[in-house]
Length: 553
Picture 1 (cartoon, rainbow, N blue to C red):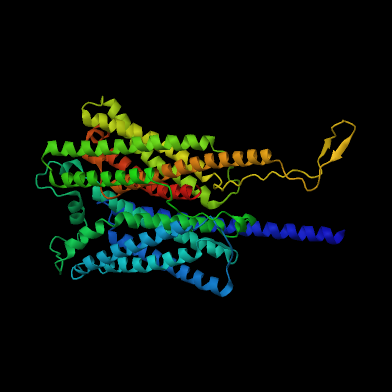
Picture 2: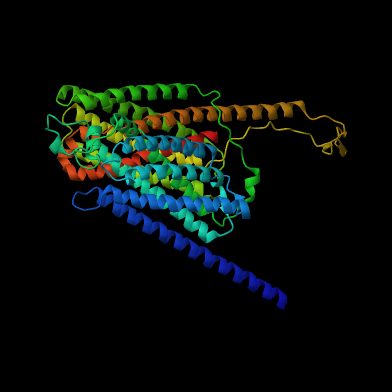
């Protein structure tokens, strides 16, 4: 009795010590992350102000320090995990192949962007700081190390050196978020034009204004080779991929941080192996491809008109109208498609997933949180249009676009969240009806009971009814499954084009001046530059979530 009581007390003490260590590790790692983020935010904010004497060199030096420190930790973790078998459990939900593949793709494009930067910056070494060359060089090393790290360890549930692992993962998360803030700020500066430049007949395009403002040294500093301008224009178009890379890496770091010390559930050994297949998906795929092609065509025409036709108001308004109409068509078709898919989910009797995992909780949180950015921009635009009376066809189109976008965001969030929480489809097996050989039946004269012959065969009518019912259920299941796949394919491609247009420079919020006049430039620029980056991330995250929903069908 005393021995049992002592054992229980020892176990309780060990659990309490583990909880104290866990809480201490979480608090320390969160403290590290919070301080790095606040410091990074201060550097980024100060770098955008002409009054504060903090240059881009100070921010780049800070990022170089973070890159080197994070890379050293990731190399140590990888070496230590091989030497001591740090990871015992694997989380099957974390780091799916499409997420790691996306990280690899965006990482390659980020490295190409850094190579272009290096080639361009080298031309200014004779008159500017070497830090501007060192920054992309160190970033290339950081991207290579981090991509390998997450490709190998993204599913790990670390069981050794937990507190050190939590701190290292929060360092990785905060480094990627500071890099994301830096890239988003630079991207916003690319696209934001103050009204005082609008009347300048000699004004430059938005990209040329940014390139000029981001020049090296003073105006007398010229490039030592002739290809500087070419590479400057080239790496501009790779900014969106670098932004998405930072967000993908931040997501994977957070999931690993949540999984530190977590034991994988037993159901990991009996999970559904999802395989991606486009079999029987025709309508949604074809319509989605046509939508993407039409969207890219109108986006190219819109961008060309915005860059070249500065003084031609008619051409400017025509390009804006075409862009608004295209977005209205995309939002309308996606709303209709999402309503169809949501209706099928409502009559779908698949069980809800009861197992809790950090990856799915993070997916839902990011989906809802990122959509708030687009909600904010849309509602501000709707209020401005209604308050000014929505006079003119451009204002009415802008109002319609804002309302449809709010509906589309709400419907799509519902569809994705419901889809993520449903069990995967399983092939329906026909029911087998076997007659009980020991079943008793009354004799003809009613005098008693007699036992069936043990060799009596099952009733053919009963078997036929069972197979017919199973075939009918299987037909209904396949019909719902096919329609949901068509819906997912179309929505996925619709989100792709809605990501491409703002990510690569479409800014109707500034090209159409009603909101700017209503809210004043400073306030409207703040709303757009804060809300739009989250809206762009929302589209890419929706693509990833819809891909996961599709794999369950």
